[in-house]
Figure 1 (cartoon, rainbow, N blue to C red):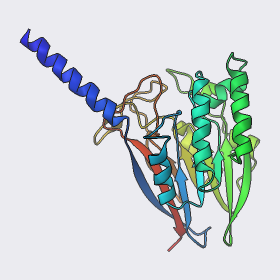
Figure 2 (figure 1 turned 180 degrees about the vertical axis):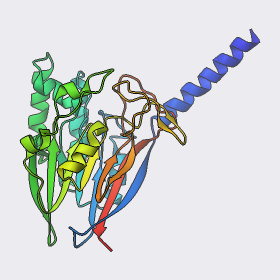
Figure 3 (figure 1 turned 90 degrees about the vertical axis):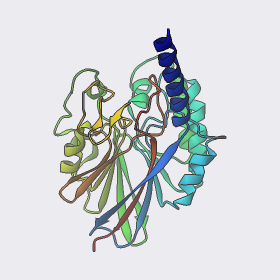
Length: 284
């Protein structure tokens, strides 16, 4: 009886702690250098918001974004929970709060690709939501690209929407070596940023020519083990290599966000939600 009471008390403490933890996020900052830029480029990356709301109307999140004075807000997918149309309006309001801060570029994650590519009962709701987002001025790059001017520099922004098969559970489906070139062409000569939701293919993003790849999807793992990393990926891969953080491939970088929201399993253990801020500076 006494043991049962102790277990119940510990469980209650855990539930209270986890409830509070899901209300918090932190800002992670990275500093990169490149010979392709002549002045500082400030980027805020938001990944895997999944229609989560912080505080009143996401104002704590918007305030944190404004504080960084970004030149670009880049979002590599999963602003919604795909099968929950109710989440679309919440995600729309998040875009609405971000657009006045800086130009917003977005590419689909698996939660957008599923209703977009499959004829599902909620697909019409998704397309209506997507149309509204475009009207806000959000640049949606699904296997597409745009070039923007930043001072004297040109910045190429690409968005890769990979095959849904690459998100299969319980197995690793490779991305074809030719996929990025077939869908995006050859990487440009200017500074190239690639929005690519699934980080499992990070080496291929760098090999293609992305100077900076921005990914999410793994949420940093539901559970992180200090000093080791993610316990399991959304594809049920144990100890995924590309889970969160910064990975370098020569002069090319991949940054994987831990995400800002959750879905299905609302758990974050040693894995606080994360807003990412990146400064790209001229090479010293």
